[in-house]
Length: 215
Ligand SMILES: Cc1cc2nc3c(=O)[nH]c(=O)nc-3n(C[C@H](O)[C@H](O)[C@H](O)COP(=O)(O)O)c2cc1C
Image 1 (cartoon, rainbow, N blue to C red):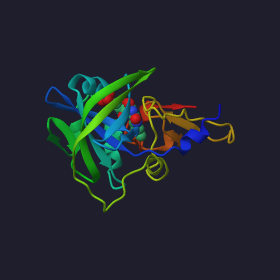
Image 2 (cartoon, protein in one colour):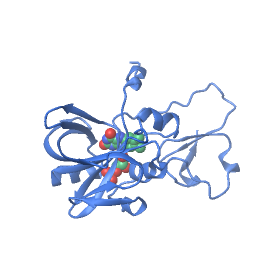
Image 3 (cartoon, rainbow, N blue to C red):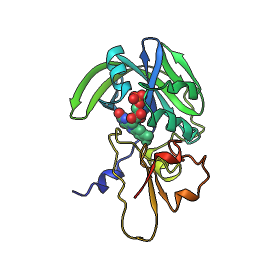
């Protein structure tokens, strides 16, 4: 099946935050949609392997920070390519706690809080339904970051746990060209990576050269 038409679906870019017994948890998501209008409810698709998945379902609530086109891409690297199971990702980003949930403070287009009102397991993911209980930090000066903008302007990728992950095809169009793939985030480096300095890091997930494999 040709999956390309699905790439024409539109999404935004968000940090979903959660209350891990008083500590901040959270990750990048693109799959948030408002699905009812009165006392609005949003739907969020969370991969069951993500730490944030369990924290949201245990605490029964989550925050959403709407990223803007001015959001520093390193926020996406930290929040989207490492897990709160292994590291405190929030040491790297500016945030404040609102009702025990982290909300980003820099360059967001808005934020809101949700109470979980339902969930539905769909194979690898859980669709979490959240009633919006508070909204704040509305800012219309800078456009919210769309998923398309993230791919086309920021040149970002999505990892395997993202519902919209598409495996990058390494074609044989240029058989002479060397290609290295970052094993953490899937970023494809075209050329001879060995010529980069030793402190070269992946532009997306900031991992070192040792995380790249030659294809
Ligand atoms: C652009 C982008 C979009 C993503 N979208 C989702 C999503 O909609 N749902 C999801 O569960 N994970 C999504 N992810 C993956 C999580 O952010 C990632 O697996 C993260 O490391 C999970 O961290 P955690 O284990 O601390 O929860 C996305 C990541 C990126 C970079």
